[in-house]
Length: 179
Image (cartoon, rainbow, N blue to C red; front, side, top):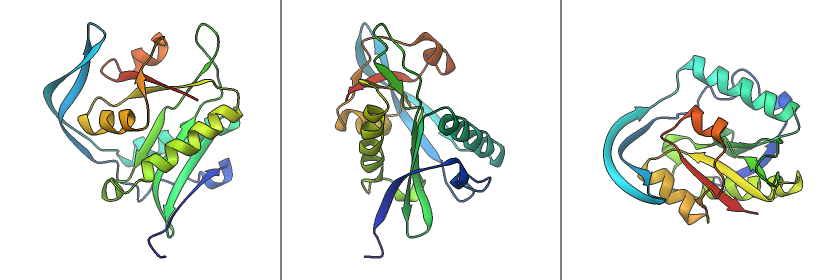
């Protein structure tokens, strides 16, 4: 019972300055997916992602803004330790205004592979539907691990690419999930 992970929607009050203090974003990437001629291919690319305390504060500020503007933040805890979080923005976009964005979905390094990301993703899909989304839009990290996760939860290449989101990180793979 002590390994139980709980996921729930959180409010601004829970997004304190130390919300991500113990969260370990570390990810070592050795291979990535890239899109060429509307298909995904793999290439070698080595880099490390890790968040500084300053970056964590910026993420918390973005999560607070998300909730304040009608979006949703979901978090997962194992006992009292934050092990994952995700969010869905309230703004709808696309030709028929059917997309809502999932800008963050992260699981702390030592808790990956335990199904926490799938639980958070499922909760975010429910919440995205509740706020009027028909499709979830994800600018997903290009690592093999991240792309494998998103394929496993039913995502595919986005039919419509949001240029504003794409320009934030052009190496991300633009995905979608029907809700």
